[in-house]
Image (cartoon, rainbow over all chains, first blue to last red; front, side, top):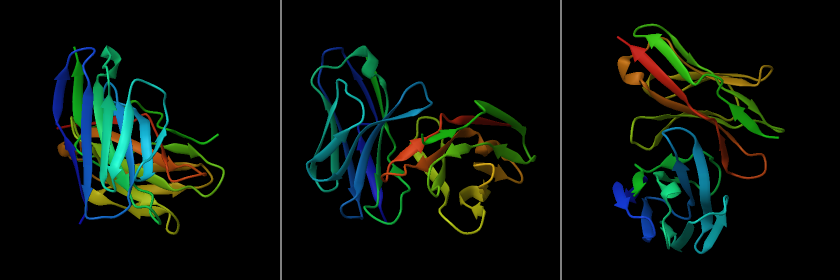
Length: 113
Length: 113
């Protein structure tokens, strides 16, 4: 069966510091990968998605970037965090073909102080 | 334009009573519809989906959803609510042009003992 991991679970970082959040998927090959941000425990905002290694599409221009160095690894980064980057970050995957439901990781709670 | 709406910000139901969480959608082609549940500080969990076929779809934890093409709705239902069903529920529809999902704003479901 497939499993998705995210770490860290929680993170408190000062303004201006760098960020690296990691997501890995097990038990599948060539998944579509997604980074979402959820603010105030409600709506989901798609930040980035990837259909393959090195292929990243950005939905919202902002202070963040994403990379996919391996087939089942997706990294969310920032060089300098802003207060507005605080939120709950969710990684998700979906099969490359046939099915469209997405499966989510446990999330990372980021607080920028 | 494609969209999905969850008209109720919060739904309150007494334990043991039936529950309904509403979702309406707008797509140009055939809809692919999904329901997810999110418990506090956790990732989203897939509940059920409608792709084609029977209008009544059964999913996890005793939930079901009814697809109504004429009303462009996909309401989530459960015959008898449990306190443990209290959570945030999201409806989503697949974009016409690709595999991404368009998300509703979420409905907070509160089940009172």
